[in-house]
Image (cartoon, rainbow, N blue to C red):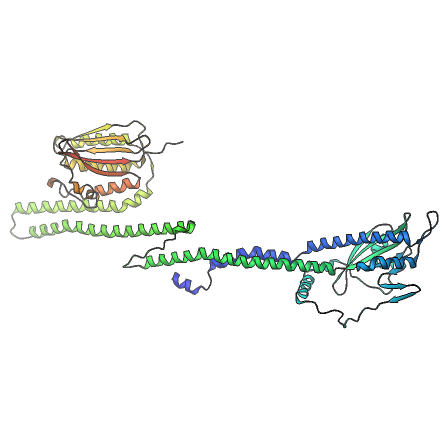
Length: 541
């Protein structure tokens, strides 16, 4: 199903999310590049300040040159001189200048050319006549964007009157009162008209008002260029972001898809054993995930093989007593069988039943062992106390077996705190001591000794018996499931799972168990020795 869903997806959802998250900041940057109202306000303020400075310079020139009168007489503006001076000072800068008298009348306008004795006007071309070539497409697009984003409604309308007076311009009235003033208005074609008014003074006497006007075409061109440059940067950043996002998404999604498909193959496998791809060399979290999946898969296959082997061993072990039981019952059911023979056969039946019961109980314990070990609480265990109590118990129990003695020795210094679970460790020691009792001859001794390898190392528990020892070739196989090689008097009393369970418990808690033979100097076997290494509990800080 996962492979089918992957084929149906044209684009990876994870790739789309990565692209979206990485594109959003670039998109916000693009919107910020387009919407530059704060920058536009700064340009407008700078332009108005420039107009005020220019107006103050022109007004100072008019006040020095185009004024009639003296310090002790009444001063007034010389209109003719003011017009010619205004034209020469203002026209090269492209600013429109208008001079109003102290009574509010228009004395001069830089859009009107002045010659001696004559006034010439220059009419503007008709609206339908193209004065210049068509603007480039990029400029038209930039102007359209600027108009869409402009906050022009906050400015008053600019009206060009045929006979303007100072009352049409509030900033000019402020200049007549001796204060500099400025204003921004919007024309009918969408342009912003910037005005700055300054007083024309002579000996602190305000003689007129000079107002300079300029449109915002230079500012619009500057904004258009800034927007264009920032859009280019944003487009480049967007392209790089998309490419890097696709690369990043590929490094994440492709391995995950490979792992998902491999997991499906493992799940659907019947005969073969599919392998998880090896991505551990990546050195990142996906590599860690890959290593974990490979380890998990290996563990699962090992567990499956163990279960299959265990099931086969269980079937084999159950089949033997069942076969014996069936044979005994069939023989006992024959007519004419003497009572003594029937009694022996019934004893065999009871032994086989007890053997099956013990075998089934041990199999049940072994099958539940993994889950119980995982759920069991791990805590410090008083190893000396546990072994001492167990040795005391076996001393009384072993006395019933022809005087077998169980001796406990301590060859280590306290503390004796071990890491694990006292119940499980008790199960290990009981199994090993029971095994030693099975092979101990009458009037022999079993020695349980508690020692330690080194300071801070694991505890070492050795259990020695004086039996016949273990064949060298079986020192490892005795820990396999259902291995059982015992004296004839103990036949059927052990399932062969005890030592296998002991090893499983010790390996779970980080310990170990092994078997060797004790030998005399002449090489003679003195008995078997089981060595159990128990991890020590960490000291509390």
